[in-house]
Amino acid sequence: MAAERQIVGFGGYVESDAHTRLLIGYALALTGVELPRVLFVPTAAADADAAVVRFYERCAGLGRLSHLRFHPWPPLELRQLVLSQDAICISGGNTANALAIWRTHGFDRLLAEAWERGIVLFGASAGMICWFEAGVTDSFGPTLAGMRDGLGFLAGSACPHFDAEPARRPRYRELVEAGFPAGLAADDGVGLHFRGSELAAVVSCRPGAAAYRIVPGAERELEATLLS
Image (cartoon, rainbow, N blue to C red; front, side, top):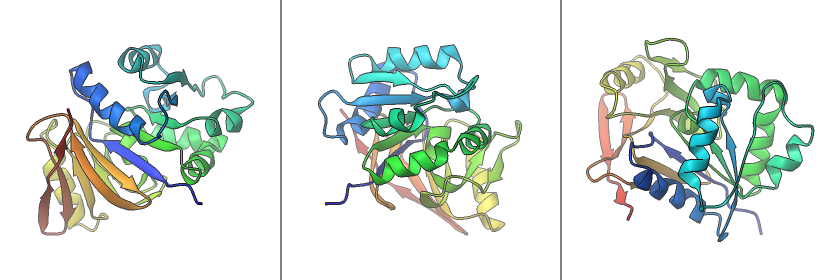
């Protein structure tokens, strides 16, 4: 039987660790493993020590945790490390930089192989938009831009932090009206759960937070199921 491919993208984590753990716990439950092996990849955060420490703090007790740095170089047994996981968590940060580094080392292909094998892929912000064909990002500077060279596991575009950063909504709408691929936006605390290439569920750790389908001339709210 073919493994089920699953991706969960979060619009952004929230200040409360307890609420963020609800989001992460949702993704990890999809593995079907009581204490899953979880690999954290902080490339978008420049492999910063602080990002790694924060991951271990947030996820303590949720699984068997490890992390992968690409600086100064990735481990020799990179494929073995990646494919031995139950879930892979991608950090927030600079999406464009992360994609460039991954492609240099063939990690993009390993992520595709992991996905095909049923390893759950998830993350917030950069860890949300990297899976799509395109995304709205501040990777190139403080002005939000449309990036069209995502991993392409999921069709269309994505925009995180939809309610947290005032420029997100008008900029995404502007880009789509100008011909940027239509897609999905998510508020902070909201998760988009894909089974295969189809959106299967929208979840949230915040009452009233939602996701949105953005197409030329229209925006449709997608109600989220509140996690508890």
